[in-house]
Image (cartoon, rainbow, N blue to C red):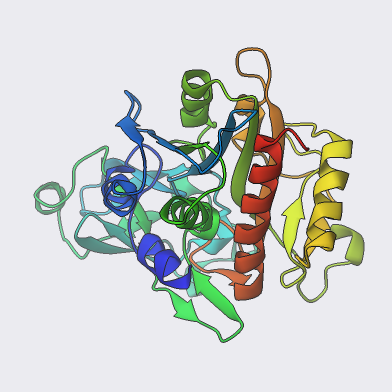
Length: 339
């Protein structure tokens, strides 16, 4: 799992530019599935036949895209104007290195010693920031970068002992979990969706859920963990090291509480650490999947991740293993119509 995660987080695949990751995932799963296709939006849809026929059609979904930036213009001095692809807090981007294809750049703006009064405390928005790629003119930059090109944070995977640190843990961990399940022998038939454009409105999963038409689905995700110094207990959302995080409600989905409680019981019975999220926050592909066709029985299983949507997310290795184990267990139970 860690090697898959290291490989996937190293790939640049912001919303709308998932092709690099898509190629790698297809290569990793093509010999283990019975059906495989890429739809018109770029989603991967795969089917794997299990040892037994499933009573209910189950779909597992993970999104391939990460947050990033789109180049929107080039200034006379060669600096690049940009817009966010997905929800990125402006506080985490100043001074960070990014990569645009094979071109490196740094996000910068007015130096702090030139700011006055309240300007020093204010968070700069994108209009006040630029990507510096080392050029001196617009014509020089235009030879390297085009308007519409995309950029991602340029950070490396780090092993922190019991934890890992990387960009794009949201949602490369979900991709890694699905790939590991595909590469293993499965007990029941299962459908898989590696979806595009989740970070800009859950667009890809709306298509895959319509195509697959599942009875039940699990979104495998990363979610905000605010278990850091100074945050009161009721604001932590979930805690790194305490296992898989399950939502009862987020900004896009109201989950069936009996289903969530049954999965928590299932986790406890099988020695898998799991926890309920303690805040209504964020949203996932579940928001579009559960409304597809005649409605889909929906579950969201997530990895607690500190500093999500930043250059460096931090998560526990044990939670990654728990996410894999609970996803497979819950999917098998759904396939047998036991959840």
